[in-house]
Image (tube, rainbow, N blue to C red; front, side, top):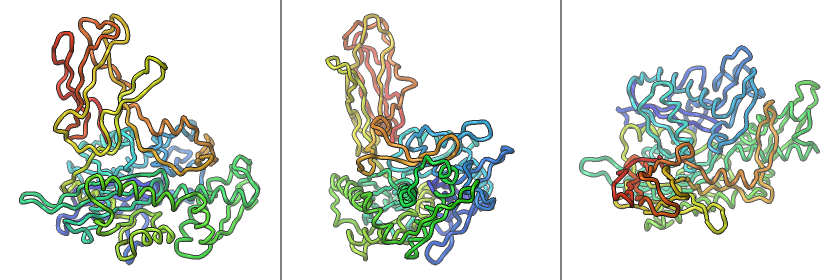
Length: 529
């Protein structure tokens, strides 16, 4: 088999798919040892659990290998890597004398998957595609690019996950119709409104994104809530020494209970202290899980995320009644109460749940095989400057979310002034500003892992929130304008025009206002998302 490969790196499971030119669709690829068969409707598909374990003799077990060796509950097994990478989490675990971060673990995991997938499908010089969360910053895309290039895959493309899911629903998609893709996975929630445009004379159908929204909420959030509930019901704390020892196995149990309650009315949870044999247990019913999700505001925030995507589409002239179908994807969309909410909002006849697990991978394969795609900028981009009166930082937006690209005229123009006499190097601090969203709670917390690998509940500080909403894109190269002769303090020295090119790069055209010379023309400075 040969063709173009797509990878959907998920928080809980990862899928690989290959484009089948005969049947004109993406087909999931099984990677021996790594994959496990999972039932999806009447068929089974191969998924790779997003797990990696580091052995004492410096070997690595990937996906199903971790489960087969009985190491899923080990403190040296990494999970939830994607979620922590997208959030730029600082946590690290000490393994075999070295510190492993989610970035390192994720890179080791994904590199192994790519190498073996490439061998399965005989890639050679073919192009590959990666799916990317709606709310991902540039650093996540750069991380994916580094992995691909590190194993010699020079040709790759990126597509956001909801858009890939729309393409992956295949026969359910008809040109001329508008769809809402509801993607509720392990780490995030995405909603996107997409229009499948009619094919042109020389082109096939084109997928046009009308509006999209994201939320830091997924199956791992629900696991965290169950984890906290179990500790509360047993009158325990996450810092208790025996709880620390069994925290990894307790998390696995929380995930299992959540999954079982999608198909049965009650489930029991048991975790054992590996040193004393003491047991921590609890029983949960489906209604109790639904009450827990209601208490955490889950259903309210599902609705709000959908409405944000709909509101963005409305800016392009598309109303909620224009939505032909709702396509549900992601493992967490299997939760019965989540499906019920979507049916209540849109009507049962419009909600489809045919390919919850593999639609993204299939669609990414269609995308890399040549399915045309029309998108817009997802985040705001701003220049940071200092307020001379307060001395504090302020931000001026230069590219607004929703901007189509490539731009036909400058999206912003500004003047750069010198901050002191004799200044030769001037620059711009360019920030990506995300519509970062989380559940509104009085005391926001998240589940993290300490250096020993034990899970614990930690508060999310205001600084954490700001760091997740703002990303300094050119931190390592903030000054790139050279004044010759040197500038004088307060002197308007450079006039800068901003554009976005076809490759989604922010470009600048710069004129020296003293010498009247053009120093940069359509010069790319950062890659946008």
